[in-house]
Image 1 (cartoon, chains in turn brown, purple):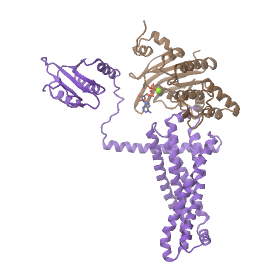
Image 2: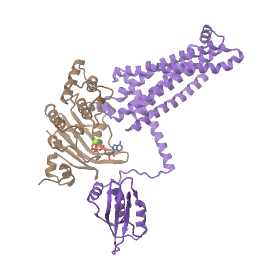
Image 3: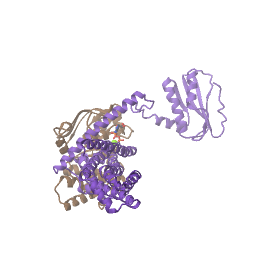
Image 4: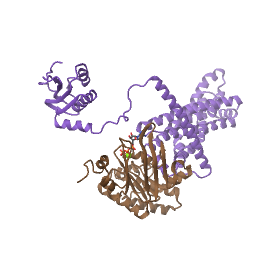
Length: 252
Length: 388
Ligand SMILES: Nc1ncnc2c1ncn2[C@@H]1O[C@H](COP(=O)(O)OP(=O)(O)OP(=O)(O)O)[C@@H](O)[C@H]1O
Ligand SMILES: [Mg+2]
């Protein structure tokens, strides 16, 4: 079970001289639904960028399985990147391509599937996120929440080993958010996908997360790591309790 | 300090004043009247604080209101300044005399303590620091250029090995955009440039009755210089700036990040099709511009002087050799590379805001024109040195 998939050691993140977080240490195991949580502006998206290779650490290492990501050479790094899928906070769909072209892009670049097969996969992925029939729409022609879901469909296109989500449920109605949670659990259970989620949504944190890290913006480091439920039950840190109870304090 | 007429404020005026108390350690600051946007405030907060500073400091200040007819954000902003001053000076503040709503807002505004390192210093920067900064920025810029050229060459190498990843459709679209779509404006501009050259030459040459040599002047002028140069200027405004804006917007929208994490190199996927489209199309456009320029010259000469189309044609053929065309077309390829590099580089380095996209487009255009003119002078110098 505890088969480390991503290991972060002594990670320090900074923009220039402005340190965002320092000394992060945690492990994401294969098949985890790992939650990155913390107050707004504490550096969650920045941590995600370090994990997916968009920003290099000021100090410290990120290991994928046993491979040091930032010391791997360019080809190996591309191979690692190809095994991950990312849903960006803004969706980040290619605005000059239709939804179906967006999702088909990684498939045409990295697989030898025929055009028909690719179309079938595209339709299936869009259906999974509730966007069946929107193949020929451009990203600018659909709503923000729909863009997010289309971004998710693109992230899942290659059935990646690890999926990263930056605030997947922001901008979704409660029912769609719930469906998204179901989808995440389903991906984990059926494909064994490791999932890393940045979210504030308490309901989903408890519903799907089995591991987590809590970042704090005042001390600029992590306060705890572990299962969110366990953190709520056992943590003694008032900041964590406040966060996990919407500022109400632990229920008696 | 004299007691203020705080009890009967005029309408539309917010008054504030110190109420004298028997207890010298405590002051009461009383607010009354209308504290709303558009109302006149009797005393700016800086003046009040200056008064506090000059007088003897009380140990405690009680904030209260009386006959307050209305308030909005104006009142809390004023109060926050005073409270912050009190904190700094170690004076105790009692806000219990304020309306409940104001107390609540004040509490909220101070609920999350300001991050001391988050505020950017806004006060003036010394000239020396400014100079240093712009030098560093220049060095950074040069580094970026070298880095970008290196990456572009690697991508070009991948293309030659057939390993580059891009969508052929994108390439066709870029070709369409950089080639046929530019024809109308290239036609207009180069025809007019031909006309101008012919007129300028005619004034001088007709004094000697040597109008026929207008053909030489226009022919050599357009083929060696103006054809390539004018197309380059047009394309840097039309296409180079567009490249910068397109890539910049993709950057703002995280699309370039998305490509990277997909394992697709943005250099191959985005820059390569644009670069190659421009390199393929520019010489063709320049060639077309040459013909248009000579046509413009012929129009003037034939209509204004006693020169026939055939004479003009023969004179042009005699004057303009194949190697002149080679020089012109060689230049246009060089310009194409410069325009595409300036445009794509500015786009890829673009910051993440709307104004950054605008800046990227502007600097792409400015840079490419500077590069073009400098490169043109160098090439012309070399050519004349070696008599090409
Ligand atoms: N490009 C940048 N340059 C400088 N500082 C940045 C940059 N991007 C983010 N920051 C800073 O990094 C900090 C963390 O930003 P980040 O986007 O990671 O926050 P976050 O935890 O994802 O917040 P949210 O939950 O609101 O999305 C912020 O304080 C921000 O000011
Ligand atoms: Mg974020």
